Image (cartoon, rainbow, N blue to C red; front, side, top):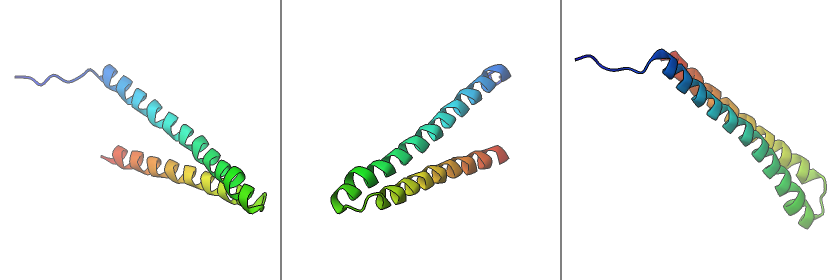
Length: 84
């Protein structure tokens, strides 16, 4: 018996949709992590300690770093998957 494999066209479409999902996840994560860092610094830490704008800047930068860290992690996984 012959194994039935999806056509190349369907496989390429699935791979493209998977890529779009990962790309949108990375974009959303970059925005959310930056906003969370900003919100923590501005409304929580600086509001109570009266150190405005220092913790706002520091935590916003940490949020940006967290977003890029996630981006690099996803890129590495995609590179490892592509090497197979």
